[in-house]
Length: 413
Image (cartoon, rainbow, N blue to C red):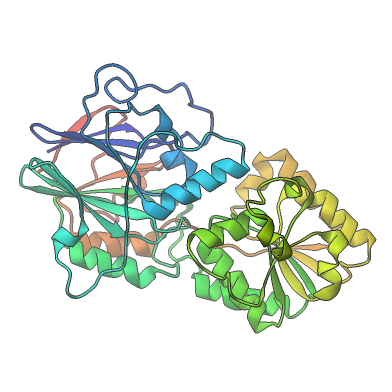
């Protein structure tokens, strides 16, 4: 078995991993770069020329892992978890991007059960190479880890992962099922931050409760596709007797995973850009409210997910006197504020309305304790760290870290 990191040894996002055995070759993840557009990226045998790959496997729904999926040659099978594909396509709908147009082999993923065998996890087997899928823990719903078996070797590709989310026990059980591997390919996003332990989602929920007790109106800025975070703020809202208000995009995301829809605590806010778009069925109109339908007068104590494009509506709420004791909880990476001028200006406008900005976040990526636990359970003979700017920082954490550059081939020992 041989491995080539096509992209990812010196960058976060846009990682592409090639795994070869004697007669078969696969790719794991095919997404956009985070720092610059790579829509023109081509790979001979994958996106142009005669196809040489037996399959492409996507770990989760974030654009830097799935974003280039439509470029893959149509005769190459692509494997994506069922809800991951739906989440990606819905995101494309609301962001005016191209949905997945090619044929996809979807599979389902579930927590481990005592009775299952390894074959219950097999999603690909051509007699030469087998791919098994295990549930991970990440800020993307139903993220996958892939166990690749061939040439008598076992390789684990973790994708993006952590163990401080709401599925922390699931990923531990997954890793224990997998056991020792010959090679580990793992992300190293946070290695440069040198953080021993991140806040758990449960701890974040408890802190959110303390904040929500002080304010009547709580605005929340977070990634809508971070379902763990939505759960944290929903539970905190219930504990502080507040209505939880989702925008239309977030609501339809919850529909995909069949969560929260029947809970009385949920209301859906139809903000201006969506007012005449994306209402799929007139029978659902009673679920949607806008400012003029008095949602906020009916529920004066609320938590509401917001986006930058909602600024005109937030100003209107302020002018109507409906944000008297308000805060915004910013629950994303702080680095976005410096990088994105539009976001910076949005926060400045909220401050002008006497809305206090409170920072409350935890990472979707692994901390040092998670890395150590991963290494201890899988005990790899070799480790390759991708999705990182400085993989060498993992030398004191992982077994036998192989420091390579993009394009170099490594043989699994």
